[in-house]
Amino acid sequence: MSSITPLVQSVDWLALAPPTLTAAVALVVLVADLFLPAARKPLLGWIATAGLALSALLLLPLLGGGRRTFCLPAHPDVCSYVADPFALVIQFLVLGGALLTALLSIDTVKDQGLPTGEYWFLLLSSAAGAALLPASRDLATLVIALEVASLPAFALVGLRRGDRLSSEAALKFFLSSVAATAVMLLGVSFLYAATGSLHLSRVAHALTALPDPRLATLASAGVALTLVGFAFKTAAAPFHFWVPDTYVGAPLPVAGYLSVVGKAVGFSGLILVTVQGFPSYADVWGPALAVLAALTMTVGNVAAVRQDPHRAHSAVRLLAWSSVGQAGYLLVPIAAAGYTRDPAHAIGSTVAYALMYAAVNLGAFAVAALVARTSPANRITDYRGLYARRPLAALALGFFLLCLAGLPPGIIGLFAKVTVFSVAVDAGLAWLAVIMAINVVIALYYYLKWTTVLFRGAEAVPGTAPAERQPPRAGIPAPLATAIALATVLGIVLSGAPQLVLRFASGALL
Image (cartoon, rainbow, N blue to C red):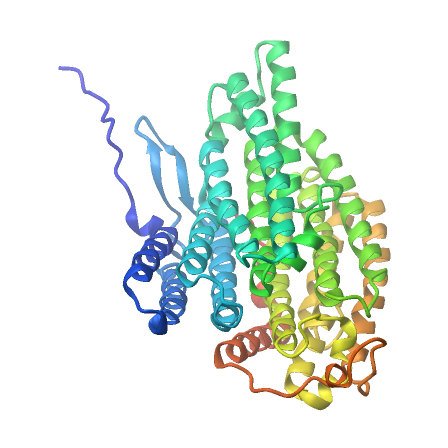
C-alpha cells in the first residue's frame, strides 16, 4: 500500500508566538475599545505596552533553536517561516522599537485627542507584520508581511483628523508605498513565472540554471523590479521623497516608529531577497546597491545640512534627513555582500548598525516629543538653552546626537561606523568607503551644531511672542520619561560594552 503525503502541515506555535501574540493583543485592544468608557480608554495604552513587552519576552525560548514551520511536507528544509538568529535579532529590534514607541504614545494620544482604540490597534498590527517579516522565507509571505506592517502605518500618519499636514503626509506615504508594492509584486510575479517557486531557497537554486534565455531575461527583470520595490521601502534615494513631509505630518511617536521599525522591515526584507533569494545575481544587485548607498547617504546628509533652524518643524525635518543619510550607511554592508564569498558575514554589520541606530534615534525622537509639549513648532532654535531648563533631557539628546555622529562618548556609534567602513574596504569597495568617510564628516557639522545649541543661552526668535521665546517648564509624563531613560541607558550600556552589538558583525546570522 503506497503511502500518502499528508497535506495538513503541523504548526510550531512557539516559533510563531511573538508576532501572533502582538496581533492577538491588537484585536483585544480593538474589541475592548468598544466597551470601555471614555475615562478608562488610557488603559488600552498600557495593555498594548504590556502586550509588546510580553511578545519580546517570548523570543527568549527561541534562542539558539532554529525553529521553523509551514514547511513543504516532502521537503522539510523548505519552509515559509524560520526563527533563525537573523529573524530573532530583527524581531527583538522591531518589538523593542514598538515598545518604546508605545511609551512615547501614551500621552501623545491623550494630548492630541487621537482615537485611542484605533491608534493602538494600528500600532500593534503594524508591529505584528514587522515581526513576521524577518522570519519569512518565501516571496508571498514577505510581501504580505511588508503590507501588514505598512498599511496600518498609513493610517497612523493621517490619524490627526482635520490636520492638513497630517493628511498630506499620509497621502504622500500611501502613494509612494503603493507604487513600491505594485513594482515589487510585478517583480515577484516575473520571478515565479521564471522559477516556478516562491520559496527563497528554491528561487535561488532555479536562478542558477534557467533552461531558456527568455526565462533568464524575465528573471533579471523580476530581480530588478523587486529591488526597486524595496528601495522605496528603505527610503533609499531617489525613492526617499516622501520621508521629510511624512515625518513632519505624523505624530512624533509615529515618525520615530517609521524611522526605526519601518527601516528594519525594509532592510531585513532586502537582505533576505538578495542574500538568500538572488545570490547568483550578486553581480547585478551588488553594484546597484553600492550606487544607491552612495547616493542615499549624500542626499540625506547634504539636505540635513541645509535645514533652516528657525523654520517650523526643522528639528523633525533634520531627523528625517538624518535618517535618509543613515539608510545609506545601512545599505553599504548589503552592497558589500554582493562582492564577498561570505555574504552572511557582511550583512551582520548592517544588523549591528541597525541595533545601535534604533536605540539612539528613538531616544532623539523621545526628547523631541518632550520639547514639542511646550514648543509645538519644534524648531531647532527651540532647543536653545534646553540644558538650563531640562539638564537631563539635554544631556540625553546630546548623547544621542553624538552616537549618531560617531563621536565619544557615543562609542557605539563610532564602532558601528568603523565596522561598516571595514566591510566596504574588505569587499574592495574603496570608492564607497571614501564617500562614506566624506559623508560622516558632513554629518558631524549638523549633529554638532544641534548639540551646541542645547547648551547655549535662550535666544529670541524673530516674529515670536515673549512667552514663546522661553517655553514654560512643565512636568515630564512618566511614560515619556521612561522611554527617554530606557533609550539613554541602552545607549550607555552599548557604548560601554560595544561587543554586545558588534558581535553580530563577526558572525553569520543567516
